[in-house]
Image (cartoon, rainbow, N blue to C red; front, side):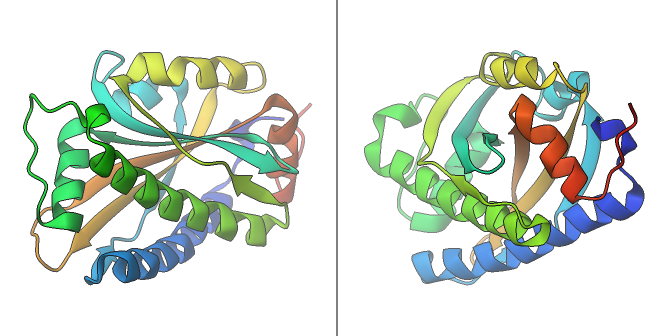
Length: 211
C-alpha cells in the first residue's frame, strides 16, 4: 500500500482538513498574541522524496525545524519547517519587539525558541486534531524539539524510515499573517508515519491496497 494510490478527492479531503486546522490555529494564535492572525488556505500535495528537500530549498539549506513525535494509534513524526529568515519574521510579528539578524543564533535565545515552540504546538496540535477527527484515529503530538540545521540532516532519518513502504509524502503548506505586517510566513508541514502506521492512515482515507 502506498501514497501513489491517493486520489484528487482524497487530496481535497486533506486540504479541507488543513482548512479546518488553519482556522482553529488562527483563532488560538490570535488569543495568544492578542492580535488578529490570518492563515491563508493551505495546499495539499503529493510529492516524491527528492522533491521534499527541493521544497525547503535543498539538502544544504539551513532551516528552522520543529520536530514532534506522534503518539496514539498511528505513531510517526511531524516536521514543521521554515527558513531562518521566516522564523525570525514570525517572532517579530508576534512580539513586535525581538529584532534578529543573520548573525543571531535562535537556539541561544530562550524567549525566541519558546515562541517558536508554542506556535508549533498550536499549528501541529490543530492539524493532528483535525486529522484524527476526520479519520477516527487517535494521534497526539509530543512536546516539540527545535532544531536549526541543514534540511538534509534534519529530514534524512524520517525519509529513510518511510522509504521502506513508499517513495512519496503528503505535504501541507501554510501561510501566517497578522494585521500589522504585509509579510506572510510560509511553512511546510510534513507528516511521516511509522512503517506500521502508513496502511492505517491510508485505509482510513479510503485508499485501496494495490498489492
